[in-house]
Length: 190
Length: 190
DNA sequence: CGCGACGTTGATTTGCCTCAACGATTGTGG
DNA sequence: CCACAATCGTTGAGGCAAATCAACGTCGCG
Image (tube, each protein chain N blue to C red):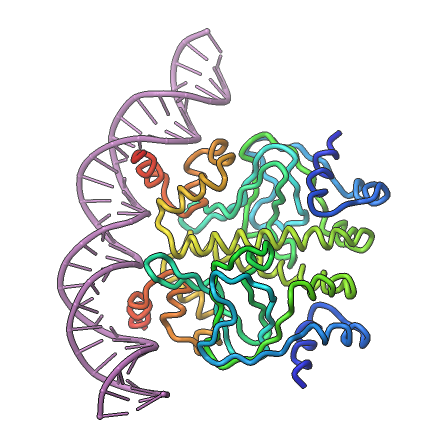
């Protein structure tokens, strides 16, 4: 059942009753994405929070020189969206697309807000998820202002070996804010 | 009254009843900090979430070369803590101290957890605060991987003119991950 | 007063980027 | 199923933004 992985994932943080599970199911919109398919394009308004069931997605911006800068990856069990756009209703500055064939659950913003009222535990769930994201972000920021390219790369493959194995190196370079050439040279030195 | 500023601040996000306000007051521990005084030292465990009533604080790490890297500033109305330490109970990697004589409210972790149960609106408050922090962090990360020192500095003074006026330039340099000399040279060019 | 904190300026170095060329692999349309 | 085009990683040469190192002036404060 497609729902199983979702409810198992969130059970790490909140315990739902059967009734609450039934209330939740209708808001989960199951979607399949082909590799390279967009979930969101910059300029559109982001309307959904997305949970990854299977596969790998990325969120990224494109600067005026046409360079992509990856804000985040999301693999099985992770959430992804353009949060700012979702929150404010403004046009997304980020693109989100699939790096592999993927399956996701999308939750409409309005559905999520109702869900908060019907099943307040979700308020707690997202607070916890945001707390974790907050900590991860802070560490990434500190890495960015205090470490060399090499340190950041090695720290990345230590922290996210799964992602390192799945996505092309130049995507990781883009996430770390360094060039693919530099990554290649770092790797050469054992 | 010292409480006024606090409740006025959070009223932007949640509306408390008089009864809820009275439940909240006892957990707010009022504290004064002298300039340069520590609120938290790396190695200790962070036990409190802190709201700034007056003044300016900073959270920062010190690397093996003795260089400070500022994770965040907090002025009136902002919250500050070593979130990771607070969350996990592990030793703080960050120091927090006052850049000016300051006044704060500290909330003990255990008190906050009880407060979530007694006044669930606080669950919502912190979710909203975390959402905002999430967005700010994401923008800071993207700036770090896609912009030059000059762009980041100018963007900083555009976004936080108040902070730029209050704290020494080398602190801002440390926040942006660039050297004080570079800031000085950027400023020279008009 | 004298010392430390802060900012500035100059000379030099360096880590990383840019640009360019080249194999290897993948995948895709005829 | 092959041919050709992307995609991906590697390597080299050269350049540049920002760091480093060092010296100096100013201010505020104990």
